[in-house]
Image (cartoon, rainbow, N blue to C red):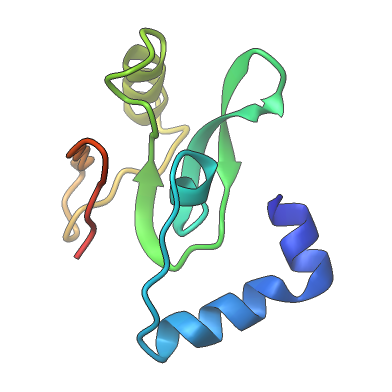
Length: 106
């Protein structure tokens, strides 16, 4: 998805909209795309891997953190090994917020 957005110039259009105050949202892959990185199973089928995203929001995002048993330990491991970005207000602490059915980032 992100490869096509870059190819079509949609990433530039979305950034311009975001900078003008447009609310951008999404679920699963549609939520990780706004961050610097996200944990995804779409990079390699059946494997959880970091994915470089659009970078509108600082840090990384792990969708399904408490909904899929392998997500939490994989995400925590990648962060502790320094293989994924961990950033919150210049502190080395991830923020995981799940308010089913929505997550809010302010």
